[in-house]
Image (tube, rainbow, N blue to C red; front, side):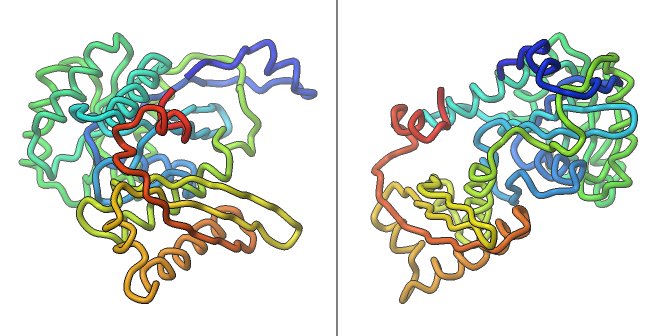
Length: 311
C-alpha cells in the first residue's frame, strides 16, 4: 500500500489536524485465525468478510479506528499459506505489501488448532519483518491452557521477545488489552483520516465482499472459492441503491450449483446478501445477481488484474 502524501492530506483539511498515537498495524496469521473478525469488532461495523473457510480475505483492507488519543490504521491481509496458483500469488503480494507498510505487526494465533506449516510461515514473516511484533492469542474463551501453552511455545521459537496478549476477537471488551498494547508501540503524530472514517475502501467493494461472504456461508466445499464477485452497476437515489453484480465461476457445474433447483439457491443468496449490504449502507438495496462462466479464472493474471485482485 502506497502511503498518502502527508502534506496533501493536511492541506485538504480545513480544521487543525488532531494528534495522538498513530500508525499502521498489520494483522498477520494463518487463514481463519480471526483477523477479519477482530477488525469488524474494533470498528463496530461489518466491513471485512468473515467465514470459517480459508481464503475468505483475498486482498488487504484498511480499517481506521479512532478514539480520544489514537488513530490505529489496521491492515487486514489474507491468511498466510503456500502459493500455488495466480490467485494465491496475488494474495501473497497483498501480505508482503501490508508487512512493508506496517509500523507494528499483530500476529494472531488460534490455539485451538495445532501449529502447522502455515503457522511457521506466519511466524517467520513476523520474525523477518524487523517491526515490533505482538503475539495475540485468540479464542481465549474456548482454548485450554494446554492449547495456549503449546501455541505460545511454537511462536516463542521465532519471536522470543514479543509481548503476548490473550483475547476474544468477537468480544469488544476482550480486545481492549490488545489495543492498549498496540498504542504502546505507536508514535505520536497527526491523524491521517477524519474521525468518522473507518475504511478507504469503496462501498461497492465492501458490497462485493459481503456477497462473497454469503457464498462462503451457503455453499459447500470448493465452490465458493471458485467464485469472483464483480459489481457491474451501482446506482444511488435518495431512497435506495440498485446494484448489479456478477458471480464469475470457473465451470458450468458451479453455475448450476449456485443457481440451484428452480433458481432457489441464487434467490436465497440474493436475499441474504441484500440484507448484509443494507445493514452496512443503512438504506434499501435492490440487488440483481448474474452468473458467468470464466474458465480457470483463478489462474489468469489478466482477469485478476481486471477485477483488481492483482496489480
